Picture 1: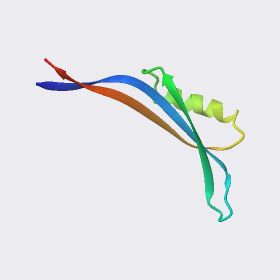
Picture 2 (picture 1 turned 135 degrees about the vertical axis):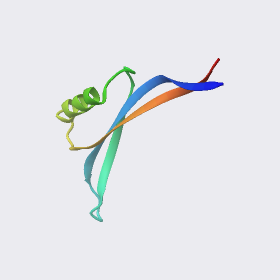
Picture 3 (picture 1 turned 90 degrees about the vertical axis):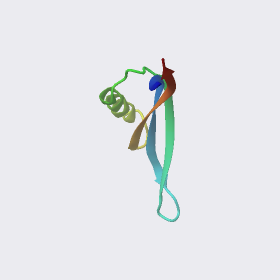
Picture 4 (picture 1 turned 30 degrees about the vertical axis):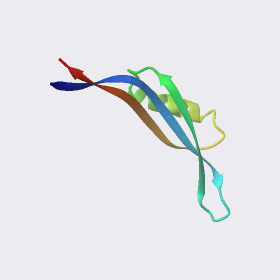
Length: 75
């Protein structure tokens, strides 16, 4: 029996540096953007993230993309 996966959804998370604590360690905050188009390319997400960075009051630290899949048996 063969098994395959079906992409159900995609999201991306922006992490940005919001400051430094009393010990000098960086403080980060994150925002998750869900329900993006499942076919969005990495390049498109990166370009959107760079555009969004100009609206943020803080520097962008990391962009993460997450995809959710269902595992199904093929008959």
